Length: 510
Image 1 (tube, rainbow, N blue to C red):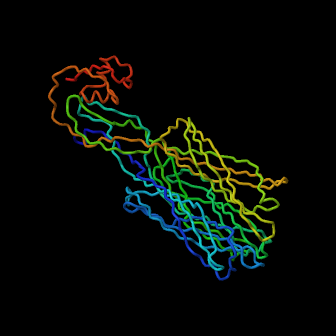
Image 2 (cartoon, rainbow, N blue to C red):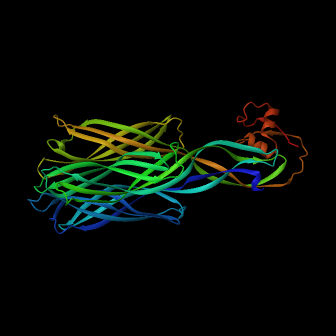
Image 3 (cartoon, one colour):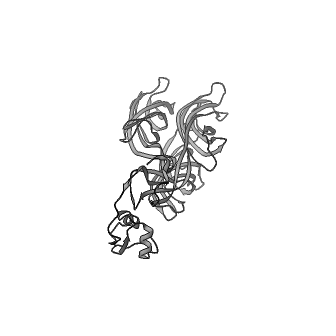
C-alpha cells in the first residue's frame, strides 16, 4: 500500500536495550613517598571514584577511571604519630553485553563498596578496592506509528490508549567546582589526611532552550597541623551547568546525572591557612516529552486481505521522578567514643529491599557509619563502624508491580553530638530520588499491502464456543466478522467480558 493512504506519526523512543550489574576487584602495591615516615599500621583508607572514559563496543562496554585515595596510617616513629599520603588506584573494566552497539547510549553508576589496605613492609602497602558497576544501554529509535488508513472502507482497527515518553533530546557538559577552603587561622597545614566529596541539593530549571542545573559539591577534609593536631573542615562549592536543548519547555521531564571526572586537592601556596580544591564533573541530561497516543495494535478487513508486518518495541511509559526526605533521629551508646572527639562521620547508604505496596514504595536498608574520632589535641585518630537500619515509605499513586525503580540516596545533613550521659545523638537527613518507569510493549504496524479480494464465504453464520485466551477481537478477526456485529447479535453488554465455554453466534460479513 502506498504511503499516502496511511496516516503516520513519528516518535523518538528511548529504549532500554540491556542492563547489567557487575562487581570486580582492583589491586595494587604502593610505595610510601620518600618524605613520609615508615608505616607501622594503617588506620583508614578512603577514596573518591573518578570516571575518565566510557565507551560502547559491539557486544561489550569499557569503563576506565581511578580512585583518588588518602591512606591514613600510624607512623613507625614515636614522635610522629598519625600521617597519611595521597595516591591513585587506576582501574579498567570490560563488561560483556550481547546487545551493545557503538551507536547506543551508555549510563553507568560506579560504587566503591570497600577499600582495604595492608602493610607489606615499612615502605610499601597493598590496596584492594571492590567496585560495583551498574551499566544500562539505551537506544534512540525514530518509530513511525500508523494512525489511519484511507482506502479500505470496512477496515477493523484494534486501538489502545498509551502514555509514552518520547525522547526530546539529550546533551552533556563539563563543569568545574573550584574554591579555596580556609582552615582554622591558628593551624599551619602539614598535610591533608582525608577528602570526601558529596554532590547535594540538585536542582534543574528550564529557560530559553537550555537546561540549567545547580548543585553543591560538599567537600569535607581531615587535615594535620604542623604541631601534630588533627582538625576537620567542610565547605559547600556551588556547581552550575548549562546544557543546550532546543524546544525544551517547563512541561518536559528533565533527568540530569552528575559524574566526577577528576579532582585536585592541594595546599594553597598563595594564601596561608587554606587548601585549594578543584573538581571536574560531567553532567548528562535527557529530556522527555509525554505523549498521549491512541495506537493501532492490530487490524484486518472482513472483505479484503491485508498483508502487513509488525514490529514489537519496548517503550518507556509514564516516567516520573519521586523525591522524599527521610529524617533519622536516634541515640546510641558507643563505648569506644566515650570521652572522645568526633572529627568526621562517613555515611554509606545501602538499599537492601524495595517493595511496591498500594500507592507506596517501601525502601528498606541500612546506613554504614564510619566514625573518625580521638582524644582532642592528641594527634591520634581511630575508626569505628556502626550499622544503622532504616525504612522509608514513599507515596506513589496508582503504582503497579511491574514498574522499574532506579533509586539514589544522598545525605543532605548530618550531625553527631556526644551528650553528657556519653550517648551519641545522631541526626541524619537523607534525600531519596526514585525514578519510576513502566515498560510498554507496542506493536508497530508496517508495510501494509492490499491483496486481491477474497471469495465470499458460503455460510452466513457460525456457532463458536469461547476458548481460554479468546477475546472478541481475536474471534472476529479469525472468522472475518466484526466485534460490533458479534456484540449486537449476541446482546453482549461489555465486549471485554466473555466467558470460556460461552456460545457465540458469529455473523459473516458479505
